[in-house]
Amino acid sequence: MKKQEVYDRNYIVSKLKQLSHKHNILNVFNDFLSMAAYSISNSVSFNQALENQYLNIINKYEKDEQDLFPKMFASLINSLNPEEFNDVLGTIFEELELQNKFKGQFFTPQHICDLMNEITLNKDEVIKAIDTRGYFSMSEPACGSGRLVYSLLKFMHDNNINFHKNVYIEATDVSNLCAYMTYIQLSLYGANAKVICGNTLTNEVYETFYTPMFRIMPILPKEGVA
Image (cartoon, rainbow, N blue to C red):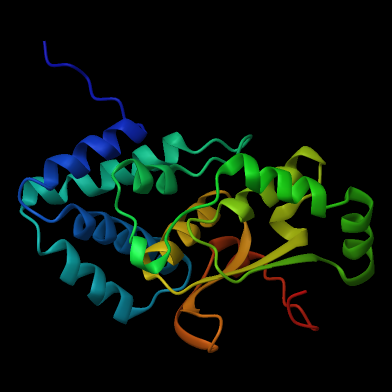
């Protein structure tokens, strides 16, 4: 009897390694992220250019290889914990040692991110901001895989604050790979966010993505992101 496959984070790792027998593993991971990001974005705001990019990527692979990508995406969804707001993609990225050391791609450990938010955030102040202007905002100028932002979501969840409609997030990273990781997981967690691939220091913007929740229930800060 054929062993039934389990669609979890281990499935993603195993299939990335399987595809690396024929393709560069970093390119495969980047292709997986790109197609996931384009699919999520186009599900709520269709863009033909993104669709064309998606097709250009998927057509690089054989049919049996193509079939692995939606299964990896399903595995990602199954692996995300809406109680803990874990960083599945970032941990896979580190486990496979795909980081670019020359670009300083070293992600802050999750427990440090949690500590930073515990020190910085105050429930009463968050509620006051929401009552005063309708939302609480966060700007992350070098988001990496998004761990500091997921920690923020956990803080809101643990304090019974509706981050879907009352928290606006703007996250930026110069690496498109990092921006995609953050965008995908923020989207799947239901965050109201704008994710930018760009250089925070020079104000250059290469790509901008809005999460589905932002499209459905947009928060439009009048004063910019605090």
